[in-house]
Length: 502
Image 1 (tube, rainbow, N blue to C red):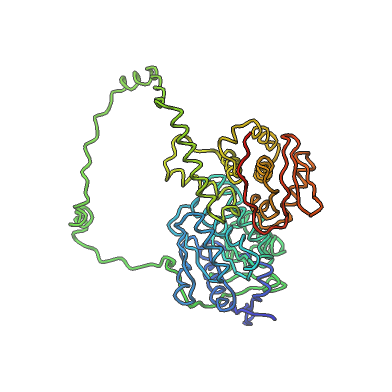
Image 2: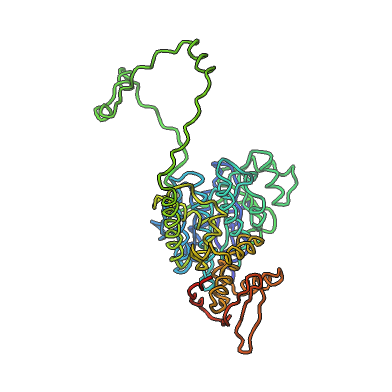
C-alpha cells in the first residue's frame, strides 16, 4: 500500500508527494546552504509523517523540541552518560516512542559522542523490536565529517561509524536515515552515497553544486540553477519523490523553531545621556564589579635578555611514595572493583569497546584511582580477563602466561573469547555454550561464536571434539588442559567453576 505525504507544490502547481514506504527503504539526503529552508523541510516531513511512523530526531541546535507540544515527541536531554543514552535508545525502540535527542549546550565532540551512543543503541536493539523508525539527523556534516577536524580521532571514528551503520546497514533493522547538511563537500562520501532520494536546495559554492549535480545525474552546467533557488525551493529526485529532477516548493508547517532567522528591528530613539547608559553600571551590576589591580611596571629589556640567556633549572624529580607496593596494590584493587561494576551491567557485553572504555575512565575518576589511566589496549585485555573470571593470582601463574602469549597472536576483539575457553579448560569447567561465547564476543549471533572456535582451531590454538552425547570438549595442547563436556546449545552461559590450583 502506498502512503503518500504532501510536501508542497511543484513548479507546475501540482501537489508534490513523497512515498513514505519507499522512503523507509531508500533513505533521503537534504542539502542546502544556511537559510535555504532545510529545517523547514525536515519539520514539514516530520509533522506530516508523525501519525504514521515512529520518529527519532538528532537535533544539534534544539530546533525540533517544539514537536513535543503538538505531536507528543519525548525530548531526551543528551547531557547524560553514553551508557545511559544507549540504554534509553534501546527502550525507545522497544516501546516505539517518537523522540527528539536535544544536543544543544554540548560542544562538538560531546555532541558526536552522544549521537554515536544513541544511534548505536537503536542499531543494536533486539531483533524483536526492529519496527520502522524515521531517523532524522540535522547538520549531518557534524556527525559524519569528510575529513578530520579539531575533535579527537576516536570521537570522529565513533560518530562516523554510527552514521555509516545508520545509512548502510540500518534498513534491515527498520532504521530509515534522513540526513540534512549545509555542505555536501564536508559530508563523508560513503554516508551520502547510500541515499537514493535527494532534495537539493540553494547552494553557492562550486564544489557543493558539482557534487549535487553528480548525485542528481545532471550535467555540470545545469548545476548553476542551484544558485537561483529561493528559500524553501528544492530540486527533488528519487524513487520516493520523482524519477526525474523536479522543482518543489515546500508547504507550510504547524510548529516553529525556538530560534528564528534574524530580522531588522528599528533602533531606539537616541538618548542624550547615551554615554551614561553605557559606562554607568546598574545597581545589580555594581555588585559584580571586580576592581582589577593596576598593571605591573614594565620589565627593562636588559633584564628580559638576562632571564632568557640564563640556564633553565633542572626539574625536580617527582616524589616517590613511601610504600610503592601498597599504592600499586590499592590501584589494582580499585581497577578490579571498577571492572566488576561494569560487568554487573547485563548490557555491558553488547556495547562497543569505545563506549566501555569511556565508562571505565569516568568510573576511575569517580573512584580516584591513583596513577596513569590504562590505555585502550591494556583495558581491552584486562576487561577480557575479568569477563573470563581470571583473578590476579591466577593471571600471574606460569600457565596463564602461556595462555596470554598464545592470545597475543589474535586481534583484540576476539581475545576475550579465547581467554574464556582457556579459563574453562584450566578450571576443568564445562565447555562454554555458544550463547556464552557470543556474549564474550559482544554479539547476539551464536553462529559467529561457532565460527570463532573453527578459526582458533585452524590456527592450531585449540582442538574441538564432540562426544557421543553431543557434548562439546575443547582441548588446548600448548598448556595441556581441556574443558569438561558442555552443551553448546544452552541458552544461558554455564556457571564458571573455581580456578584450579596450578
